Length: 102
Image (cartoon, rainbow, N blue to C red; front, side, top):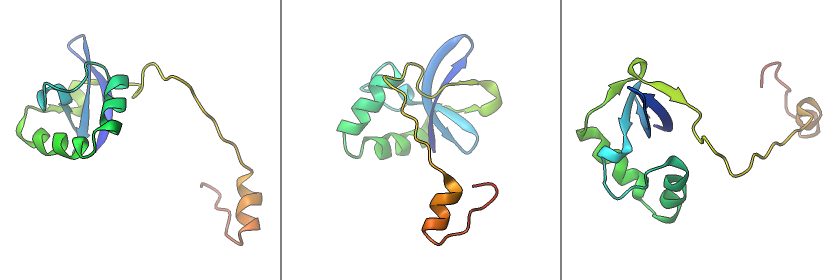
């Protein structure tokens, strides 16, 4: 399960991507926020909410992945944080193998 933003028939929404199908979270509960940014904050403050919505998603309409256009998951991030590391040096310092494609 992944949380995705999508566009279908010109309408932007968000939902779950499960088994190559998209489920609109709004179909699972009328109490969820209208936009994905607010939803992420809401879900973080409501323990068990994601699991409950995922269970309800099994009983509502789904669209095949190819019926929707996936959008950036968080369309307006509050901030972007990037971390960098010297992968090979870090792996070597831990006694691990530095794979060519980490």
